[in-house]
Amino acid sequence: MTAAAFRLTDGRPRVVGSIGSTPELAALRANGARDACDVVEIRLDLLSPDDGGAGAAPWQPWCDLPLLFTARRIEEGGGRSLSAAQRIGLLEPVLAHAACLDIEVASIVEMGALLEDLASHGIPWIASFHDFVQLPTTAVLEQAARRALDAGAAAFKAAARLQQVADLARLAEFQLADHGLPVATMGMGPLAAVSRLLCAQCGSVLNYGYLGTTATAPGQWDAALLKQTIARLVPARA
Image (cartoon, rainbow, N blue to C red; front, top):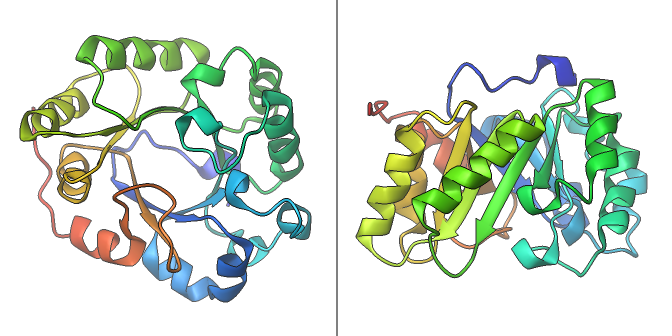
């Protein structure tokens, strides 16, 4: 699928199937991925630097699906310590295959040259924010969403650890609010599973599960099960 065909403005809750190892890429059959998710995320930071994953383009069979490429900074859950330049070096070679990229809000400045390159190619990007300790204040989330909007992101993604039911309610309220761009939210920790359904019901445009056998973030559902379950939900309203 071309970048021009990948848009998140229709509000439909899409399921992202995330893959974090080359063996899992090789083991998955294309039809299985198509049945299990709407978007395939390739976690370049989780691929072994010795397996030649990116150069071999093992995602080639899924090029009719939107491919979302991520090279996560280690401070927000990346698989290894990579500088901004190293992460750009992983992402630039895959632009020809990319329907979308994920760039952290915290990396907007240091990866500005890549964002300019994306704009010139018409490739949308998701501005992401992760907190593995707690759910930040709503003001912090709103500030991150504004930075994403101002930088030209196609969507804002927020993932945070939920410690109590009140956190879950506050994350859902943030999802229901109008932030000027499409938003994807999800929880991590003990309330992660239920949060991914509630946030989808409240309009989260991207809802992450895993393809294969290994989750790429705490609290992920199996992508196929997540897609089947979200399909049964009735959209909530603010």
